[in-house]
Image (tube, rainbow, N blue to C red; front, side, top):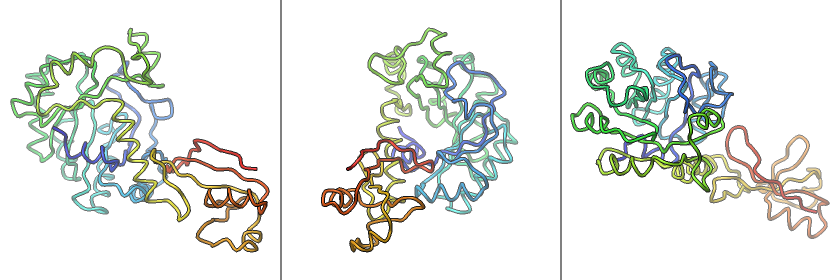
Length: 331
């Protein structure tokens, strides 16, 4: 089973809203947060650092977001912000803008009530690893029923460290709606800690951890409400589809969108007057402060014919920071 939130994510339609970098409950050895996100109060919508609330709406429109996933750190440690953002997104885009939230604490009924009133659709609990297998009869069982009573779909989202049948029991008992298991990964933020715990990368893989995938699939994979999300799928589908979605939204008339969701265009350092002399249609270029951006294929022709002395083909991400992937000189 795949949830509505996951369906939208797979389509590249979920904006990622990072609301709070602190997590006071524990310091998980597998926490993937990098230094720029860990223990900060900064807010990010996708790659955009947020200066005001309107920036969040702007970023959602920039990618034609279908919904928003709310993460941290711990969003429940910043309830005022978290609830304000959920309400704001629902007011702007309507009830169909699906919201889900990742949390590593139970939070209690008051938090569930506030989140529900703000408009949260789905909450994904990540219980502390040391409690796996011993959650029945604790606040972790109780909060699943409380969330449902308050109108939020309760679920689990856990790292694929090992198989755990207790999560299946919660599904069968009707306490949780689904359980997402993310393939265990090493990142820049947790690499050293993971190695210290004895974990290693799969051979030939950039992030997936060697080991537990087969056991998890053997024990949990046949349950109809368990979804195993591989690291390859996250990169090849979720991330790439979000880039493609964003690229299609923001591309200019002359930008090419690649299969990876990047934008390709030409860049040259001639003058606007020179372009006017050559009769280049205005829809094929944009004048910047110190250069001109132009259709890459047109720039190639102009350089081949000696109309322009030099330039380059630029490939960049469509994200707010506009990170350049590659530059190919033309002369």
